Length: 61
Length: 246
Image (tube, rainbow over all chains, first blue to last red):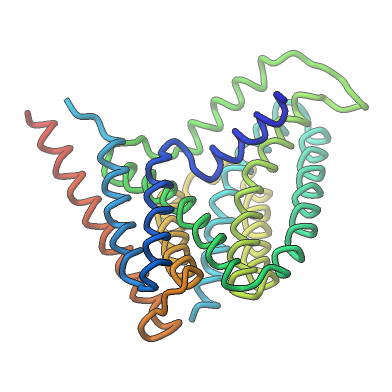
């Protein structure tokens, strides 16, 4: 079980990294894109997701 | 045009990963002996070749739209990681990647590690070199497989990667020092932009959207990602300057 957990953790860190909210944002945006079958949702969502991810990464004091 | 971007992305991503792998292999070779270090390189290269040989043909069996959706989404999430780190580095919120400092640290660690002979090899030197090449190479394999399969040409993506590996290895052999003068941080920024661009384009297509202008729209997406990234760098730099003054 430890080996399976380590394997899963490795791939999670490899693909998703330390900001799972960004990955979740991309997943939601793709769902909306599929529902509306329109192209502009994803670039707009990526712009918001990236800005949000950076905002969370910098110190706020 | 997308073929040129495909080879360029594959080349740049492979080059930056190989520069990092070279630093580790040099540290292992210089401190623990070249036989163990180079055996580690050979074993890792063989493992990566098996991964590409097994997964490559399997990916080509998946229907193109499903492949573009899944691979595009993976590339997009993966690319956003690269882009976020690159923007943080460019704006001064994260330290720049410094091959000289990493090399010095690897040398110190390798010099003080105890000697353990297995199968006639220094085990520390072998595993350090093996892990370094395998982990850095895995990112290259991931990019080659995803870019290549989605664009319908794994050999073209692989050609870009092989060219980078050969170039970095040649320069490494000649220099016998970490390639600290390679503009690694700029290259990483470029790779993050490419991965994000292709990720947006393919995953939207896979989800059923039609891009205005067809494949040419990829240039528009590229311009959008570059402009937005530059804007974010400028905003973060301004914020950093304000915090420094206060």
